[in-house]
Image (cartoon, rainbow, N blue to C red; front, side, top):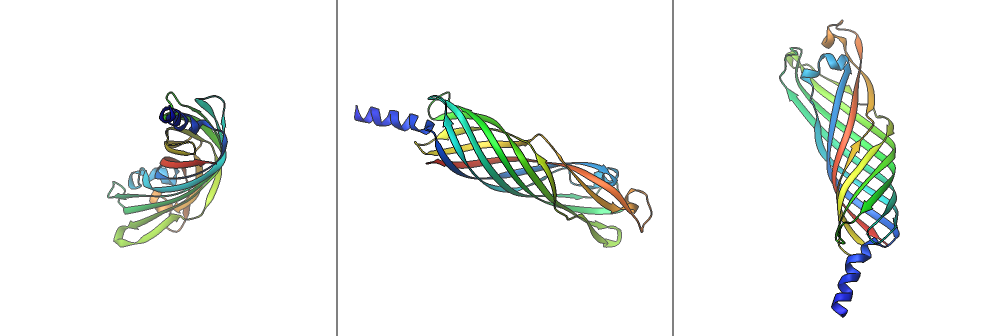
Length: 223
């Protein structure tokens, strides 16, 4: 009876309400949609970037019943992704290396449901601020070099949170999830006008809509 009671306590205790602290690490997948002058030369630009992401979150878990509840939390994620493109039909550009740094700070609310005591699923949404610092370093004809972007800019972020959980004990939980951006950030910059058929001494307006998808593994401890 003692063994059975202890096991039951182990399986159900993960649903207790309380303050929680979490850490996570994962992989960002940054997808650009090029516009303006960048759209003209998009065949010479990377179509995505992949790298690493780390994050922390702090919040409160409210158990509504034995197997479901809500989580309210503040989360910060830092990510860095890279992309490369060599050779294209754009004769003026031989190679482009993209480096994109991103910060994401959001307030979130997730609904969780455990179909069995040890495993669960969750879905939620966040609202907050995202910033990007993208840099495209290029090598042109005659090994000339230059870069586009390089400034940090940001705006509204609305990520969709989805994933699964493994409830280890009353206060320990492992998560495998994803943050899916519902809003892209429209990053505005300039490029040498010669790339889009303009004068060699002038600049042309350009923009790129950036979305940063994050797949992550996390650990939460509920106090």
